[in-house]
Length: 572
Ligand code: ATP
Ligand code: MG
Image 1 (tube, rainbow, N blue to C red):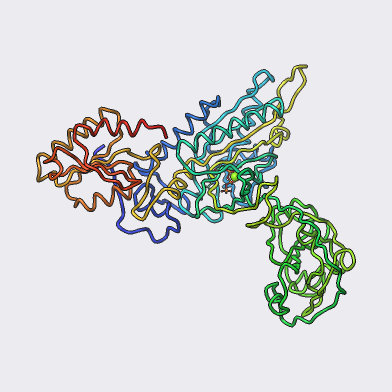
Image 2 (tube, rainbow, N blue to C red):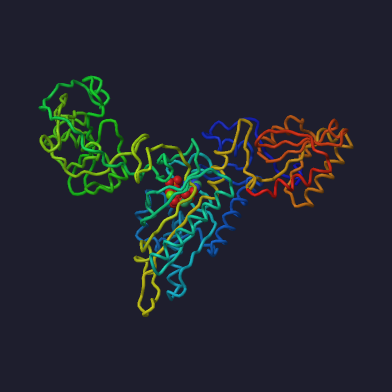
């Protein structure tokens, strides 16, 4: 392709409204253009990258034995009523509308309902199972905070696959095949990623694994065991039960804490160790108006874990100060578990402390040397807190380290969550109706483009992994309009490279200074650059530069095609 015949629309400045580097570089490089909040057009250059990601995903899905189909973006509300998600699907994410006959529709945020409807109509016998259907298609989710460009968009492209099974062993097999397939996809993109245990969220089901591209800008926190076996999203990572503290019980007493509202206030006012304190958070209960969650002073609440402990309303909602004062008799800053007038759930770490400090359920007063059982009923003990750096990892995997990740893929075992309410059955060996078991497997095709940039850039621009670069090679002639030799060599190399099947962009924009062409080549991140100028040509050479390492060397003109072919053939 010649640059004069291609829409290159690089900007001089970084866009000021983009917060993270992938968003900035995608806009600055002209790969995408914003139409509305979280809604982008893919410009010709960006589309080339998107298609490469799509092709890798498609090839690996086909290789796994899955079958491609394409389902509609527009979905009837009735199907969502059947699965029970029309009202329940994550607050507000579903964009609903009505057609001219006043029937409910939505734009598909995901396709469990549609595929289950297809499966129950098309699959009759257990002999047709297992099957795994996938599509690569546009999704719409009316995200509360669309941001970070293509990383959290409202309209985006996902590969979603859904498998159907007659037994859980068979579902487990396909789940493992998909796990391996996702590893192959991300390896082909040469991304540094981790597979982690994850929460199943509103899609539901039991076993689930997320694939995260590691990047400091990631929205998720991933907990790793130092020995390298354990990895889980912090939403899920289990904080183990510590050993009971062993020290003599001191007599409990109260101490005045005038105007000390937070744990940090109380700790510095009383000059005590924060790990010898507990804090009591009051949330709305399921069967009682309020429930107390007790954590060690320095720990943070994990709302997903709290929801799983039962007793409390989902999603976890903090009680208002007015409710706390009227039900419990004092302000939130002085609440504690001693004679508290509501059910109590105590975090594992808080449950083993001896002689701790806590609120006295009376404004401006705390207790010191409080002990469970003797002074306060421990209620239910559960894992309520976020795991932290240095905590022991589950499965004896050393101590916990935490890194940030971008979730690019998520695979679930759904079981019968959709097939049971939607009555998706086949006939089993005895001719009886058998509810199929399902798995679902998503990968964020457009998000992967952003994630690849988060991991592969420098201060000059993008450094595309070779397998998804929009063009492999950029050819830059210097002042071709003044030098016939440069013009002829550029044309000849362009023809030869194209004939050899190498994707090459010839920067034939005569009006641009060489410096501007170099800056664009670096910004746009093509892996290989060939500069054709009079000085090197006098020696029969051109100048080659590797975008990733910045290494520059003179190449004999006649070696260019073969050397580039060798690079491109190298396994990635
Ligand atoms: P997140 O937790 O980031 O909101 P999710 O868990 O809701 O994502 P899934 O329902 O598991 O997402 O969707 C499968 C994949 O689709 C995700 O792993 C991600 O790569 C991609 N994806 C989800 N939401 C978006 C979005 N708003 N923009 C771009 N890609 C997305
Ligand atoms: Mg997910």
